[in-house]
Length: 146
Image (cartoon, rainbow, N blue to C red):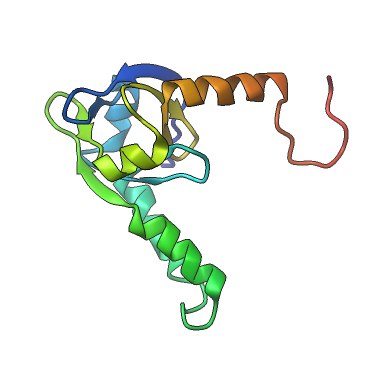
């Protein structure tokens, strides 16, 4: 069964950098998750099973000595990844380097993104969310309804 995460939640990091995962999301995750940098200024949280599938796909890329883009993608993806355990209170500890990369300081948006969960600094997410609402994305090149 494929996991799908939806919703938009506001939470606050505690003084130690721990973040409570919303119960609706947490019940699908299991006890171990993976957090890594996203392509936008956010972090991406993957359930362990999804992480395993993604790493299997990355292993199918051309070997690093043959393809620079594959090497860079692997560096980008793996160098910032952290395995995190969900504690009894439903929190994960987000490493300081990842919080710094994403500009996360205190107030956080936890956003369902299909097979993953995005973690944003709340002010960055609010700006991104407003932009998405005002200019809905399109996969096609045709005109968008205004």
